[in-house]
Image 1 (cartoon, rainbow, N blue to C red):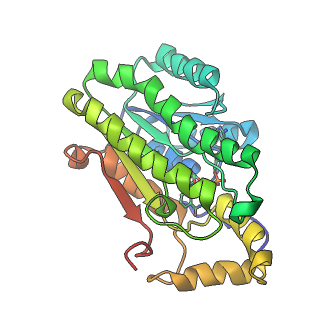
Image 2: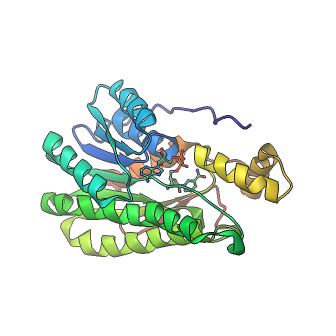
Length: 272
Ligand SMILES: NC(=O)c1ccc[n+]([C@@H]2O[C@H](COP(=O)([O-])OP(=O)(O)OC[C@H]3O[C@@H](n4cnc5c(N)ncnc54)[C@H](O)[C@@H]3O)[C@@H](O)[C@H]2O)c1
């Protein structure tokens, strides 16, 4: 299984976000793409932000099939300039921001002695500083609206750690701490801020992790992925649309009293 996972799209009959505006970082692929499609299905206009312009444009095009308006904007989330510029573009087009899904992220791994300072800084810059910059950029609009929902994609690695996940785990635990601090500040404005902590999910990122880690453990990529499924109480990896479903719930009216939480969606991994 060295090719990309087959993309599975899930249709919903829910229509909770008609006329809302959702910004999704990391929209070109995996969980971000699934979130963009889910919010589009439910009626939101979508701003797709990613460094991968081709994949980003493909997601925006797929979102438009649901009859909403979608744009793709180039964004390196670790660049304050890119983030501020893109949020200004969204505001000039739609004049409001209802949802931020901060999903852009990368995985690198290695034993403590192998992690270079460049690798450490790059993961922290994208996975943690990138989330901070996006939260900071949308907060003033949501505070002024007195409504909105920020959903930061952390990881089960933000809740627990394995050998060889130093910089990734640190970045994802950082996202949980950041989420709580932003939630505390925005609560009085009626803005909810939560972290979602997925387990292994069928995306490019987990394939990259398999390619990096399998040789170290004397396994093929397929064997490594099968072991990760076997580790999980539910005996399988997650589908990206399952993570998107939780994000949509957290942005919905049903979840308006949930804030500052870091919710595991991992088939029972952290629990076990
Ligand atoms: N797949 C998993 O098993 C898993 C588990 C837990 C958490 N996560 C988290 O979910 C999020 C989404 O990951 P995924 O699994 O969908 O991976 P993915 O590789 O499929 O998607 C990540 C996206 O982020 C984009 N990206 C990378 N660097 C960027 C940057 N500097 N600026 C803007 N965009 C950038 C990529 O181009 C890509 O489109 C990540 O934060 C990841 O850490 C994934």
